[in-house]
Image (cartoon, rainbow, N blue to C red; front, side, top):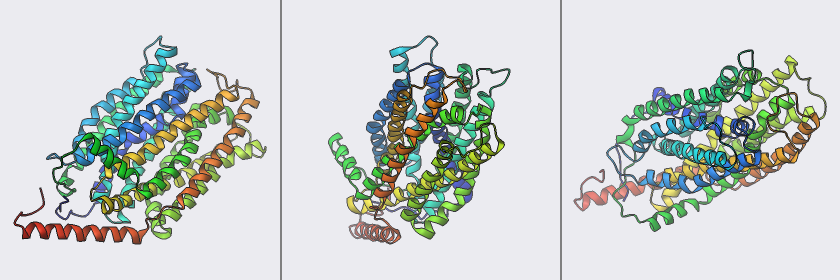
Length: 494
């Protein structure tokens, strides 16, 4: 049965900030697990073949395909005095820190199959630990902000910290830990510096998860409560299947699979282009990273405004198209011979502007997609009678993970196809190899993201449909409460 809860106090800026703070852990994981850093670390630093790196990523993400929906379902159905979400969030903090630490401390002397096994095991452990926090935490958003527009604003704060964390991590990694100078002549190939980086980030993730969870604890009395249920494994799988079959969710996931695969290729090859196409040293890559910080600030204010002005679907289509065009423009211009030469300050300025523009489009797009998934919550509750935020966000969260793995695997194939050498210092790679890598990269990204835009046309939940769903749920809750009172059962609140 469903239940009613007390009317919550308005969301203040402080709560939005502390709620958003928790996404720092997810942002750190995206910055280093979304293929670009991971591909370099395991391939160029540790010595795992590029295709094996892509395979390790894909295997770990395949595990997520099975485990993430189960985490979301368990979160949806947990009954405790701390509600459905917070026990998972508290319990995940220590495993996130511990497993992230060991990921960057691969035992010396490992190679071949043992190194592949280490990579797979640690990647699975890190991803499951982070999912155990991120899925329940993100699932709070539809309850904290039931309004069609206000939930976009709340999620903007979450992505502000997530994208900001990606930028800060990039700055620290390239300008501090991997800075190439007299004290670190190996630069980006220094294995010990990656270990130091892993230690610092593990502590930061642990602290941010605990702080965010503790500061949202006061909202537990105002969150949705459901009555006790008898659940079997078979019934659980059926209910997960019902959520997965929601047409609006299927559209978002299909669009995300195509667009995410394109983004995964970009993420995996970004550092290859920075180092070998543009000739940037690690500290120069760090100069570009503040573009992500600037984009996160701009995106927090623009995302709600654009979603309200154009509608979520139209805004998302425009932003995705602009982001792909801008992201490919510098590489296309280099292939045509119209970009400034390597080492030119104008080149760095152009790349920085491109980072800012594509990051703004990308951040706003992520905020809007998350808000669109939140709108599916009420649509699914109308259809099934149960709130399934955890499962919905678990399925949505699988898209960038799994497609990132697809992108990493395709990128590994492209790297192998062009014969890109292992342990290659910048400036030592044949320019023709780098050029061929760029030529293969561009059409892959265009085809995948173009398909994403086409599929997104079929998403049907707009403002009117959402408000109709909310009205139906309010009416059902009122009838249920009246029935409880008339039968003498008392308040449906547990």
